[in-house]
Length: 347
Ligand code: NAD
Image (cartoon, rainbow, N blue to C red; front, side):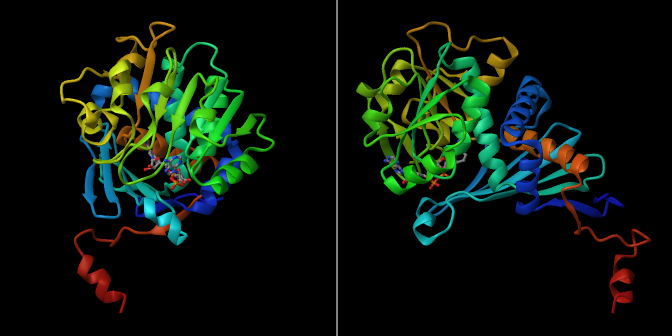
């Protein structure tokens, strides 16, 4: 069991410990508990410093920093998005993050966030769907069966009662992997040959593809009345998944409009197109789904507060389980002004 001895040692949750933590607590429990942390934080929206993430774009991808603070704690995530990585045997999205106490500025947690991002993205999607999906939705189509997809399936099963998932990917190997990974999940898993087949009978459509372009994963005629769309993969300027006409027929819900208007599906619309902020729906100030025929769209891009919530959760769980190790990351001279002396004595 690891107990941090002093503030200068930073508890570090490695990939190995994150995996142990998920298995110790249970995958679905972790996602449902992260969703509860996100919901709590979204309900106290005004407490947070908010800024669109800071993105550094290249021809092949993006590297982003996502900071926020609630005045007591400060958190940030480093995350990349490189759709061509997969062909090189690398992941599209990798991440790590840090939580610090505002009072001293000292970090209190450094954590892997590649797995944690998949957990929190799925938790956020399912949480949004609880407010937006049609009542009694049991079937979800999942288009794009890469790294995020199984997490999405489990989160929707746990938080929304989804019983059947209909999978499609342009690469059949991705679908085969997801089918295998979801065996024994309790979900009915149906592998589909086309996106049109995947959406048949689905009340929820999740798109989580990766392509560095404005793609048309869903065309207008594929989306019938009453459907909820969980659009996860359009999250960068010039990287979208839905035909513009779908947006014009949908009520659109976003995390943080200042960021989503640049990165989300709504970059295809004018800057004043009406959208609803999810924190207002969670707070009960605005309505989520208001009718059976309404098309609801969660234009997910991923916002810093979700990562803050996820880090807050891991900070608590790491202390409870001891699944971390201390990193000697902060210099700690006996006399705080004698940094130089400490260095020289180490010779
Ligand atoms: P991934 O590369 O592991 O998987 C993407 C899958 O999409 C691949 O299997 C690929 O074959 C498939 N695909 C590409 N074009 C397609 C098409 N036209 N039709 C069907 N399938 C297609 O990526 P991932 O880690 O699963 O991430 C998926 C997307 O989600 C990425 O775009 C990523 O940037 C985004 N993402 C968003 C958030 C968020 O908070 N909104 C968080 C994490 C990742």
